[in-house]
Amino acid sequence: MDSKQKAGLGELLRYVSELVEQGADEHYRAMSLSYRARYTPVLRALNAGAQTVTDITERTHLTQGAISQTIALLDNDGLISRHAVDDGRKSRIQLTAVGRTLVGKLERHWAVTFAAIASLEEEIGYPLRQVLEAAAKALEREGFSDRISAIKAK
Image (cartoon, rainbow, N blue to C red; front, side, top):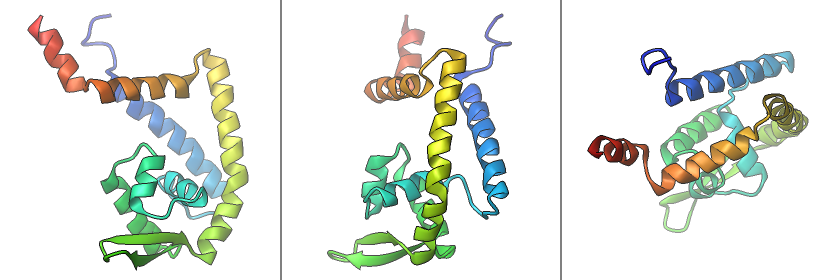
């Protein structure tokens, strides 16, 4: 197969991500939750002790912009509260009572989700999370644009 017929890396990553999110969304609906999958990394970080956007960014692989957008949605949904700290440039973020109740419902689901990931990894014969973490670290060392430029220069 030539490059015109092969799916690109970004295309495959987006497709796999869509399949995972669709499956997760089915289970959120089955749990009678009005819930967005994008909340998960932020709620998990807050549940693990993160208190600021910076803390959440450090605990996840998401950008500060994505975290800030998700925080705004969580705030609008009444799942978190924000309080100014220090000189007012940062906010301390914490789960509301509604947010804590939701996290309590989701913790078992998250444990089952990680078991499903392990099952997928066993089926495909690759430690998918480990491979993706290694790919992310390699791209942090040398970005994809630099890699393309290096190959073009050959």
